[in-house]
Length: 244
Image (cartoon, rainbow, N blue to C red; front, top):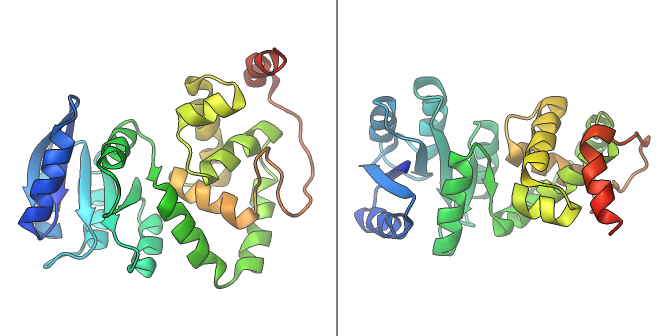
């Protein structure tokens, strides 16, 4: 079972989230909190796999609680709940090592999917939120960020760039695997390599880097870069399948 802590200062919101999550056979809501400080205290006690944190809470807000969880309960994966009107806070979430963020008007199935992804060690970035953040980032410093991002991506192989491009679209490992004719386990291996090479803490940061670089499906960036060879050991099965 995936053990979840729900932190929101509105009891009705917590009740709604609990009802949605407990409808899944593999998820259990084991704790609730009305503010960030209470959430950190309950997570520190153990028995929590994923924490859902509202950004706007009294006593301690969700972003502060996220940073505290990183120190007090580093094994707990945290997802931030937000709205479209909180653009700056959404961007700050990425710098605090969160497992991703979810819009409050997301569909129930998306909430369950996000919790499962976080529990599996992946980061979840809702497609709507991906577009929202990309639009926000494009408003200022796009040229400088793009050049810096493309320089960082030069460390990746061609196949790694292809995988990264799909992360930028918000695809899961399974969906990326189907798109590239690779197994989910192989995609997970690539994602791990990508995060290490790009010095990213999670998939969300890597996805935003891909957007900054203008990475397109197939691994091509908007600006030229030095092509590199495929990783033959991992790519061989995918190449065989793609020729069927």
